[in-house]
Length: 225
Image 1 (tube, rainbow, N blue to C red):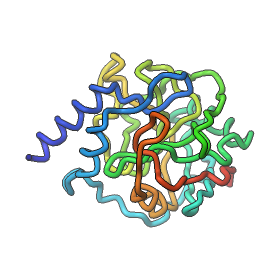
Image 2: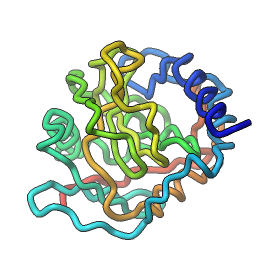
Image 3: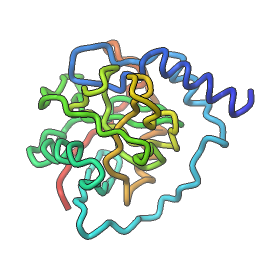
């Protein structure tokens, strides 16, 4: 299968399940099983050439240090580009609400997702949903962090994901729910090797959720640097 045909199939599977990248609404947030199988076979052509060296953060931008059970990830946030998303994320950080939650959804060649559940799959009771700040200039490239949501455009609460590759099809392309995209609000500036290690863990199905790490990957703490 060519890379182009693969991508079309991948997109069809994603949007066939409405890419419900998690939400605290009680709705089913799991994609079709085929998505897991397909994502694990992502061809080299879809991989980003982005390196894992630490990147200098802007002196004016907040940086969140996320200590996980597999290492430390530092994330620079972009308040000028996505003020609502950054304010929302920092609200959870400053109130220690991400502490002891997990990366509950891991799909190699796609993304890792967290901020919604603890290791027993007890769901975080989050703050109200925010407006989706997706726009074409905010691209879901490798290493960026974005808000997860349901098929409802403005449904993001606490859950987020880190892109493992350049996920162009998650960028805003229109105004319909399928085309609106996912709001990027920052990027990993250190610890992308940790992100990749998380992406490589063995996964299973658990309590109705797919792509769950067999051994919990815990967010020990998330604090401002």
